[in-house]
Length: 396
Ligand code: ATP
Ligand code: MG
Image 1 (cartoon, helix red, strand yellow):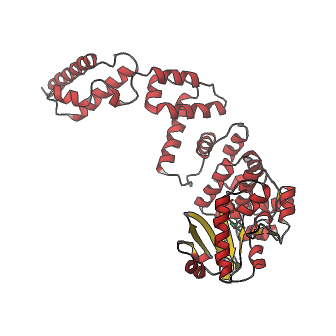
Image 2 (cartoon, protein in one colour):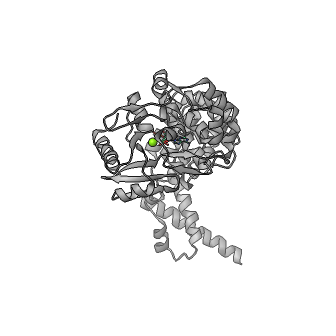
Image 3 (cartoon, rainbow, N blue to C red):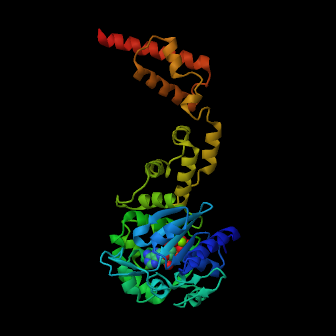
């Protein structure tokens, strides 16, 4: 299934290539998903044209992976990943082939692809060519490597995680020999760049059938190679609701020692660290007004959800009530502000202003003072006076 417009544009790419004497077919996820009956607008094209030829033939082209034979053709802003037929040489690093030769046949190109369901090709008319029983495997709902499984995973260990990713998105079983080889070659997962591992984990966790993929991940022992995430995976198997990748990482850090190898953005890292701390504070004790104010509603609800998943009591109602009743949600909401202290006094010490504003904030949040100008002014000015007197006393 694919939107008509995208398919038409894809046909144009094929026709242009063919009009210049090259072979060209749709391949990969779009063809596979079309056969299965699910939507995939991400079109991969395989062709006998070399990257330079493709660059020459289309107006807008991005040289995304030219070295490996891939360029992205843009038609009406829609990207088409066009890859030259290739035959891969020896692999020595379990990831990239040492050498790639272009210009071999379609047959050769299909042999180097990962799974039988991913080597189906299709022409503009929708006719499918299937060299490795991909249609049969799709019908049987199995993921099977093309060729001998052990050597295919040895060549490129990313395929181990890709098998799990497709299991998570499609709910297919992993064929017996393929699964045994994944188990046998699992240690190679450690050789993969962490960014690639994270990309695949992200897709595994987001997958509709993530429980199935995670069960394989654990049963085949692949989770042992994933830097301390194993207990986290065991934990999310018990959760019925959808778990987002960031929630998974928070859970994994709570239930076990996770190695510090994962590359999170600063924002993600901050969320993970804050959530772990808040979990520690709230798993046994109640969320209170100050906690809700400081951490904000969304963070509190996130941590509460995780607390519940991990078997602690549900405080969602309390959190929402507290948040609704909070007199302020931010320091800017205070009726009497830092500038007011500056204007009303001849205070030079800005650090003192900060201390007094923190006190005002606390008293307002805890409803010890109303959030009203007069009341806060009186309290603040008294505190300034007291503090200055104390400082004078100390000076003498
Ligand atoms: P998706 O729908 O998620 O894009 P896809 O199958 O199209 O899935 P891509 O990563 O876009 O996956 O790759 C396109 C095709 O290239 C695959 O279907 C497969 O034929 C081939 N391929 C990609 N990565 C590998 C790999 N590591 N080893 C062998 N073949 C691969
Ligand atoms: Mg694709």
